[in-house]
Amino acid sequence: MLNILKPSLVAVGFILVGNFPVKAQLEQSPINISSDKTIFNPSISLSLSDFNYGNSVTLNVENTGSPDQEATIQANLTVPGNTFTFDGEVYELLQFHFHTPSEHLLNGQVFPLELHLVHQDTEGDLLVINRWIEEGNFNTLLDPIFSNLPGNGDPNFEVDNFDLSGILPSSLDSFQYPGSLTTPPFTEGVQWVLFNEVLEISSSQIAAFQALFPEGDTREIQPLNDRIIQTDIENFSTVPEPTTVLGLLAFGGAGLLTSKKNNFFS
Ligand SMILES: [Zn+2]
Image (cartoon, rainbow, N blue to C red; front, side, top):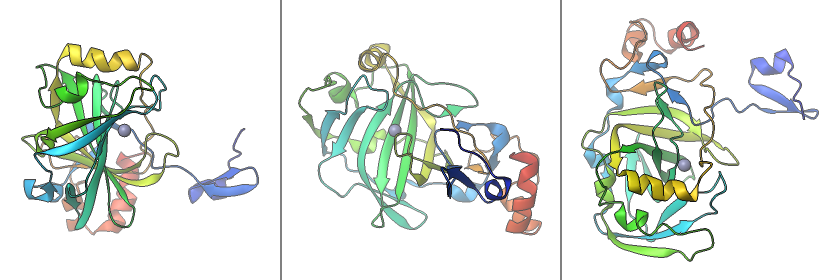
């Protein structure tokens, strides 16, 4: 079905489905993290103390329906208590899972795998942490999962004494933006935190996962629209000064951010 766009509704972010205006899905994931759409903001830096990830947790690992492109291999946390505090909110880690190839791109670069750590706060708001995964050294941390990847229909299995804290990178440099789930119903209002430091895994470990998803399990890249990506990595952004958050605040605050961003983020 075609959605007929009325300019007056489009302007305020609505589309027509049948005769009914519904809010357009303008903040979808995944996206390409592009230097010319990213602003430097050191105040978003994360700290290790924001994370309360256990070093001996029990995981319940399941195949949610390979080779379906909306399925994955998912490791569910069996008990609560593994949290990430972001912007003053405590988010509980519910599960982590994998996509092949990567869903997010880094200046157009595709990685063979991407890890998503899915968190939820007490109000039901979601926050997903990403780690891109590249081919490299054998990954002993993930081996209990990757050496036993369950096929579709296989029973779930448990991994004991998993060092969840080992999933965190040594540098917490990140990209942050507002987005959505990457599988139906593509719910928006999801906070994304993408670590810049890439995780390594061996070619045989990648091959084991890809054997389950020969067509991949990745959603296509979505338009950025009016969103701004922020990073605490110096020299990543190619957006001209003073179009940084600090620069804009110095030059007149959020109003200017709104008017200026169209020059750089359209
Ligand atoms: Zn995912």
